[in-house]
Length: 196
Image (cartoon, rainbow, N blue to C red):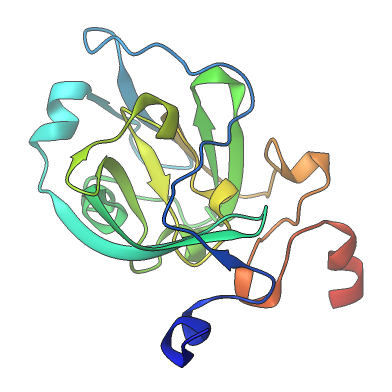
C-alpha cells in the first residue's frame, strides 16, 4: 500500500472506490411539500426550515474521507450542503446544552457531544460527488461527521435536538461505541470500559 494511502487509512480499514449502502429499515419517502428540518431542545427559540428555505441558505463544499465501522473507507468524497457553523448562526443555545441528538426519518437517531457537532467539517449535506444525494445515501439531508465512523453521519435528518444530557442513539444502544473515532478503532461499547 502506498505510504500516502496508508497515512489516511485508519487501523483495520480497507480502501474502496465504491460507496456501499448500509441502512436499517427501508429508505423513507421524501415529499418536498411537507419535509422540514427542526432545531429544538435547549435553544432560545426553536428553528424550522422547510425544504426550500434549507436549499436557499449558503452552500458549503468540502472533500472528506468516509470510514465505515464495517471496515471500509472511501477517500475524497465531495459533499455539498449546509455547514453546521452556518446553521448555528441562526440558533442561540442555552448554556446547559452539551449534547446533540440527531433524529431522522425511519426512527434512526445518533448522538454527539456539542464539540463534535460544532467541529470544522461537520455539515448537513444534500449533494455528493457533484450530484444530488441518492435516497439510499440519505437524501434529502445527511449529517456528515468526517472525523467519526459513518454511523454518526446520520441519513434522512429531520431534527437536531440540543440536550444537557447524553442519550445514546440507535446503534449506540445496540452495542456500538458512544463516540466512534476510527483512528482509535472505537467500534464497540465494551471498549469504553477499557478506556476508563
